[in-house]
Amino acid sequence: MSRKPDSPNSGPDPFGAPEFQPEQTHRIALWSEHRLLADSRGRGWREVYTSLAAEQPWTRRLEALPHVALAYCTHRPARVSRRIEGDGPGAARQAELRPRLFGMIPSDRDSHWSLHGTPDIQLVYLHRRLIDRIAAEAFGLDPARVEWTFGLGFADPLLEQLCLSLLDVARREDHGTGALFADSIGQLLALHLLRNYTARPVARLASQQPRAVAPGRMSHVCDFIESALDDDLSLPRLAAEAGLSAHTFAPAFKRAMGITVHGYVLQRRIERAKRLLRQGDMPVLDVALSAGFASQSHLAAAFKRATGSTPSAYRG
Image: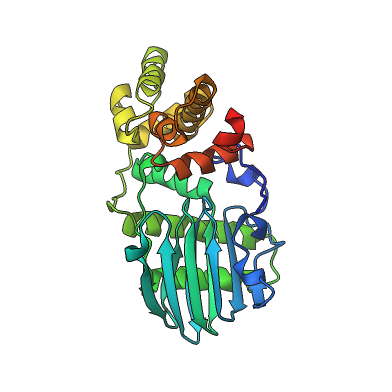
């Protein structure tokens, strides 16, 4: 599946980004065997995409995508089997996806699915730049270290209301304020998912008044980042190097550097990966870990978005 790579600088500025297109998703609702009932194409939504389709039974491999995806059953149950590549055959899961229940499609990992039944399924994709921005700025997390718990067959009343609100907006004719409303719902979804569906649930940081970072201290932070790219560069850790709280440090860094903390760290990690790939025959997995990525697939996704090429193709 081809898609336009995202610039590492595009994450902090959703209002300058293009619409989130179905070509950036698995396009499940658009498969020929399914009947599309609604989707958000042409509505200017930048950070979230949703669709509703009457599905037929199917068995397929879904390729790794960077975005976080939810499947919500709105009508008629289905029996679902899922295996995530890398977890081993014994880690396959099965669940009955009844109306009002959710499943999550793993991000950055290939997965194998079988669906038996004819359910109506709403799919919601949250753009990776949204997830990364919320993780860094709201929770002080290093996005490269976020570990998701990909649930299957679970209920969540708040998640349900947010997804149904998105579907309602997608069905309306409002192409103006509807886009702003949809992206706002996307932010609430990202906050809720990061708080409740990661391996280490997170809490919102307390708000503090922003203040500037002295140039010498900012230079120290940048040097520290360069020396610790393969380590956990969480926002609180970098803020401590600057002598500020995490919530104060994030906007101060962006004012000083013209880019978010996450965007800067991602740029430096991509540059280190490029250098290591050019230098020799280090396995791509080792390159990923040395550059600070959680896995080879995470490097591949970030590298493709930044350069338009895979690590192996870049090495030549």
